[in-house]
Length: 290
Image 1 (cartoon, rainbow, N blue to C red):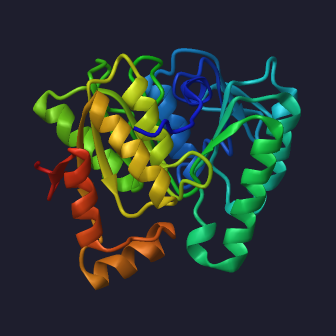
Image 2: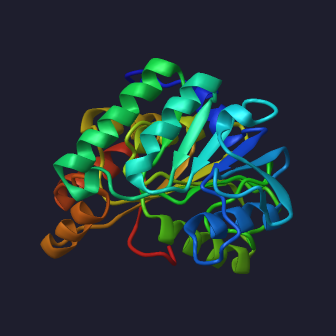
């Protein structure tokens, strides 16, 4: 088996972050940042939560800071809830203060065309040069009951850690699965909505959970992959260590076109996918119930 390179500690620092800053936090209900802020505060992140918005001094009864450089300490994780065209300035601040990870929730990147793709590549270049990792863009983030980090809007998710990890390109589907499984009594080690996967992608998370001692089963909802060869190697390694269940969407041509427009991923031939899953010993799911 080919050993696939990835950095467990770098990904772990994002998923198990001990401090959090929300850039674009807001107390105005109509704002995207307001819903995400409320979700984190209600769910109860287990560590300092810093709210960043230069236009507000107090949000939901908490002090608001004008920028990341004004915080009492550098946060390990920064969640960016502002529009795409404003993200690069925040990422430069992330590089200055020395964060470990960033979640970019905004759409408006690769999935929108050449301009968005160029912006996405610029963000990844800066992150790699500065030593932090990115989840997203175009995603809902991470749910981890151990440090009480949650997705948007996962304020009502279970607080009990389980042994199932769920990986999804779709943010909405991540929330749907989290709530559905809560009703069924299924708990998660983590859920990751990674969107475009500009930096950390499906292969990275497969490998991370394959080596995560708290995870026994990996379930994934995939619309496409970024690097087919690396994904195949990662899938093979993950399936050799854990039970892997994969639901591949975009089987028909109209579905493939919808997938490409949603996350900018290459959906690929379903026949090829089916052969890959069989070769790797992966359990194929054909719907959410499975």
